Image (tube, rainbow, N blue to C red; front, side):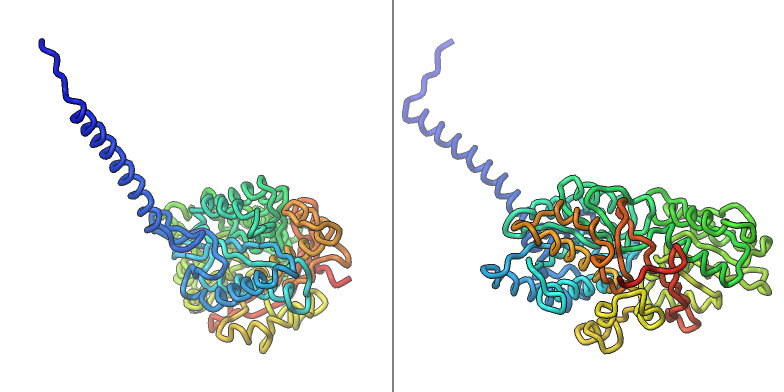
Length: 492
């Protein structure tokens, strides 16, 4: 077979053409990736992720995750810019507020609730930077969104970890969302990376003994003991527990168990039946399960029904109970703090059933009026009618307690930063976290939701717990301040 030989100039042309083709393919491939990345980018540090193409990640306030956050995001952005402009004379560190800011109907926390938390977080930043608690280093407040139900938590947490170094100097994360498996996973990853954390509304008793983590919210066990104490003083002696058994909902899982233990202490109080369960993770069944429970309740005649589930499910249960066959029987329903996440329409729907609804909240502005010794006056006054938050955000209610809890969580982080900076030049996350264990006595957190010191497991000591009632107009009424040990801690 004859050998095929090409002229040298043809070989060169073929080689050059091949190389050009390979280069073009590589460029197109890389370019497509770059274009895809740019299209998915919402802003610096914020990208589209997940089936809903949510914008998740970390913002300094310049990117607004949802329109209703516009006013508070602008204030945070302005304060962050002021801190950077003065960085040559005032050192700074960053604190991130982490929760689901792009909420959907499937989230247990409401859009209103997370907005209020962020407003309170900004107030704490302002007080620390240039207000009545002015201290150094200054704080830049970052807004961290892990998406609806925190499904994109890993991306956002990794973005936060990357900001430990300059120019952000992230040392702490506050907020941390409701008690779910996703948020617990986020906490553990932040812990492993030496970042201090302060939970705002996490109450599941099982979330504890984690390095670098504390929370200002009372645990479900503390809420249950505070609620049981109030009910016993009221004369309630029989109850039934309705328990959500959905896997991964740490809030519901610990709430019913804690109340069962707290209520049955002593001989005069008992459950008239074993817990009645439903599973909110089975979307085609849980509403039917709640509906069929009412006939059993008619037979058991409990003075009280303790609902160990989310606020979203409570409204459906109340609808079913309102349509019970034993209309002559009157029921009182008591539940936990997730009720504060219901919006005005949902609260009105619950009130329309005519059933008395009581619950333990995390905070309420009227705690200052009813028990001024249980909260810090300088902090609590900001949340009163005509106070600073009313001036900044005049059309927002404070009754859900979200603003108070967001404020106190960032305030605790700010205290840790101030204390860690006292004897050292550079403040880092694990040093801030160690200061949490020194916040006792005169160093306790002077919070609007109560005076706060921390146990070694990260839980607050005997935190003040407000008992709240839903009135006939769908409005929240303050009843009293309780606590796991009966009386909350006071100023020292």
